[in-house]
Image (cartoon, rainbow, N blue to C red; front, side):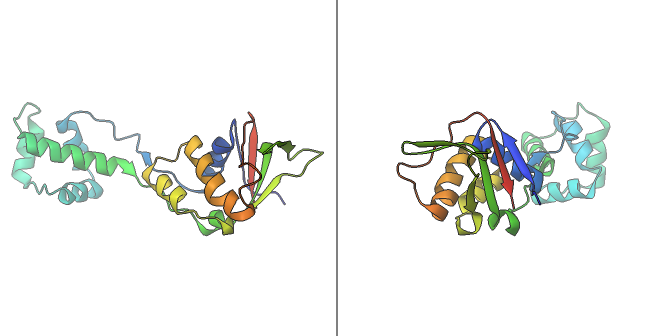
Length: 190
């Protein structure tokens, strides 16, 4: 039975596609797009989570002060308070990424596409050649997860880290390293 599959124009893009289907990435809530302090404060004070974000940055506004600030958009709020409002707004607008689950860290990966090590270049996962099989449980996933949690796991960075931290840990560095220079990849997680 086939498992979840990621596809992309590079190995890293296919890995990212696969991971995003398995785990919630760090992302910005689309409903949090206000630019000015007044609109940000209004939105923050509409939810418990918003009040918690304000408290986290050290802004505890009394109800009468809040009423003055929100009733007059031109009210002159100190710059330090505006900065705290903005920081709280940014903090509540970002949804953190879920950590990588065990089935991703310990899964069996089947990579289809152009795979090169040294002078050996093959189209893997075709009728003539099996996919490249990688045991993810032998890999070191900490650097990948750190980039994922920070929202900085680009396709290129994922490919580089996956080669170094997962493929090479499982089957070695190959005769001259691993290259995935093709334009179409699929990665199945089993």
